[in-house]
Length: 224
Image 1 (cartoon, helix red, strand yellow):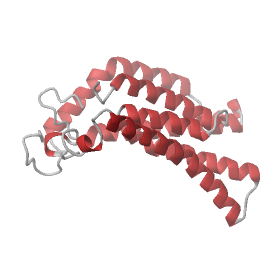
Image 2 (cartoon, helix red, strand yellow):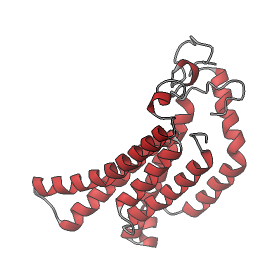
Image 3 (cartoon, helix red, strand yellow):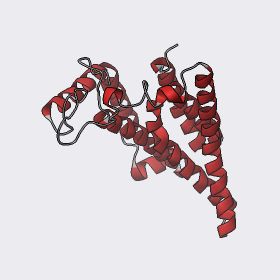
Image 4 (cartoon, helix red, strand yellow):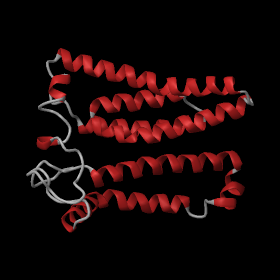
């Protein structure tokens, strides 16, 4: 069927974000979160924008392993870092290789990806132009009112779900920062809360940046 699937991608993103918190808490290994994200990439390539959040998970896991082991030597630190990199890269390579293999067997592989299904639509340009439009698939420049209007329209479309969620999160996090957070939860749980919020914030900012700079070249509806 069609190579992109938004429903599976949305479910994969939610699972990955939930599993990311388990990784930060030490309940699950890093490779499981990496595998979930790799499978999500296979359902829709736009989810690659979450890669920085996975790197954040890897950095926190490496820090925790170094602290727990009391590692100080360069060689020992290198082994820890190599293990973290392997936990991230191996699932990505396996899922990516399997996706390419399946698409090739279905007659819709790399040749299509580089021609008819290339990213960037009809003109092959990925991002909203900075200064001027040069093709009929570019509807406006980055710093323009029509672009801002589309961004505002996107936010209004998701506001019935997003705004109540933000209000709920705000109530949950009220008075839960700094010294009050540590005294109420304990240093360990407070650190986990801060790491989780940073992880989710990074993922959200990356997706927001994606919607701002990706060129919506599909015509009047501009569904991106």
